[in-house]
Length: 206
Picture 1 (cartoon, helix red, strand yellow):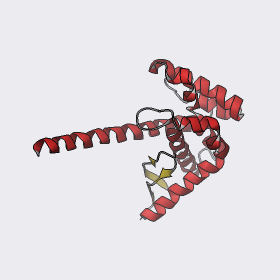
Picture 2 (tube, rainbow, N blue to C red):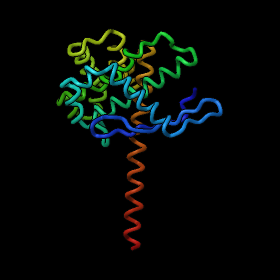
Picture 3 (cartoon, rainbow, N blue to C red):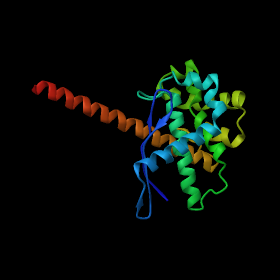
Picture 4 (cartoon, rainbow, N blue to C red):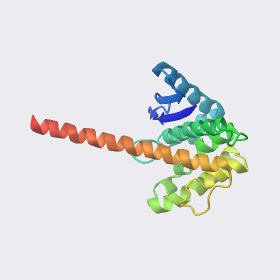
């Protein structure tokens, strides 16, 4: 199975709604099957990370802006879904068959949790890039008791901005999923700006 296209739309309550298109050989899944697959992945993220998502810390993340469009909570759920999809894809091709999916999801949900520290969030971007993984490491260790592999993935997810790369495959998957989510957010922002520009031109012509 090849994950040909992935686009996740997140609502304010961080529930992920439609749509990915999956292909297997010549077979293309229907819209209802695609929605079922997305719902299944979403439910597995919530199953593995239920205690995290229900925590006061993550609830705070629902009110902390990530870039412009997403909150930290929305971004983190999306990254967890990307990470789980990538993990399944790798396992299908017999790569990383020993990856623990629960480890993957929990690290993804908490990779940006350091942004809930007001001092970190309000710092200049260049400082934030280095400080939020370290603060996230502290929170994930002290409040959620993550294991060393999960903590390493959180600490090093900003590679190559952080010069030390991840030590485990989970970390590499998290970094990739994080970049995909940020790209998705950037494309959504660009699409919104283009739409507004077109509407402005249309009003001017009228």
